[in-house]
Length: 203
Ligand code: FES
Image 1: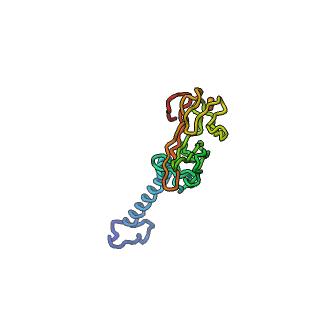
Image 2 (image 1 turned 135 degrees about the horizontal axis):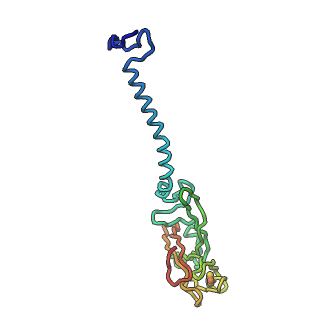
């Protein structure tokens, strides 16, 4: 029977007649095994954390900016339109455009989705915008070039080209939208509002 206590401390090698490891190597082996085990345990935690934080991370990226192929949207909610300011006619003729945004629902992001439409007009180099949604009950307001007005075919609401209501059917004027013209770029803050009320209440 081997007496391990008899091995000299500086020997560093195994016993000559058994397969046990010296104390130092045994400690290193246990330490490395423990470190690898801890690392393996942290990987799922990291993946799970990234999964739960993913919507927050994506929201912080602004919901656009082009890095993920989505729309360009600033921190104030203005979305860059696909139309350039100098491409709008100078005679004030209304032009209709679809607005796109990135839709984020919980853990799903759908880039570049149509979220609504707007009428844009350029008068004296000033651009104004209206939501096409009728403030009466939500149909789409059309432009009638012959009459020179906006008209809703659902219940005959009519508005002038500045969005002022022309009859008693709509509860308020057309809903104007905030615009920011940056050089030749048009940025719009797209919003929808409650229908059938005289107040312009965002929804
Ligand atoms: S929804 Fe437009 S007139 Fe009623």
